[in-house]
Image (cartoon, rainbow, N blue to C red; front, top):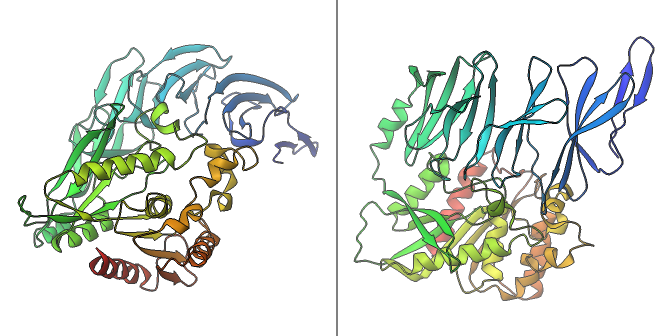
Length: 473
């Protein structure tokens, strides 16, 4: 059990601080701007009850100033900011359904909700006390894009980075300037120095050489699309088309999936290496697509937390709905649809190739979780609680449970030294497949971790995946 102690250097006394009894985790501690007052955030094991405590380390008195409760789970942030006046602090919360910024007095009294609306504050950058202005990154214009904003204490809001796409900021001390890192579909990063009114001072890096090099290749167009499920929920996706695309012909489709908490694949940005590999496959006649399912960030609390205690179910349902939408397009060859993903995306691929065994002709699962009983307990219990409390949640969406139903061609890849998704996951899945006489392709990268890089491993992996798709899709 984690505890916090205060050590008095002069008296050499060590004091166990009073952090309360109803807690399992202490995810964050931070000094306030008041001498001797330490802020402590605590969570219960279910991670749905958070308390912000102010502890006086001199007399060991503890005061709970904020309680956050959620029917599902609470994501921890590093947004807590104490103002120089020692009387107030900044807090972010999803209490109204979306992550927003709040101003509090140190006694826990709410002064003002700073931002409000059906959009997420995806990054809180800070507060300029001299100008009484907050800076943050937001999904206000689109859940597939990010823009840097300022908002004053009296509510005047400014989009500091209006160019369409995805932005991220790194602010200078004092918030007078920030470096904006910007990209969009098919457009590599540009880094610019911008002042706090949104005026560009200079371009620091425009990736001119890379952009010129890209002109030498026949790249396919990438387009965003939307569709609805039966309940009327909107979903986002993108497709890369072959450079010589002809709508009168039929094309095979490869879907790239992640689908898990904290990560989006459908974002209007430069996707680096994967984007170029996808473009190479498009040159070979494949349409490449990605679909954002529920459980991912950017669209509020209900969208992200509806997966609670049933991790994998809605995510798979949404990928099936999305892939069926793609199959309905007149230029798609329905019998030649594949899927690939890494980590949580490997889990999704494995589950879609087994539980939904007729949907995809071929799949590539890299470093997949195949049974949530083998994964990090803090992460897993946040979404599923414990195996003793929720055994069905662990088993009914485990690829090993459905290994007997594998129909399509599967390539399973893992690094033997994976310290994130331990190779035990793939070993268990392999045993289940073998037990049920299911044929599949397997490649293990000796002594490679979750990222599978170094010693030419990445080139080898992507070459292997390319060959697998050409031969099986």
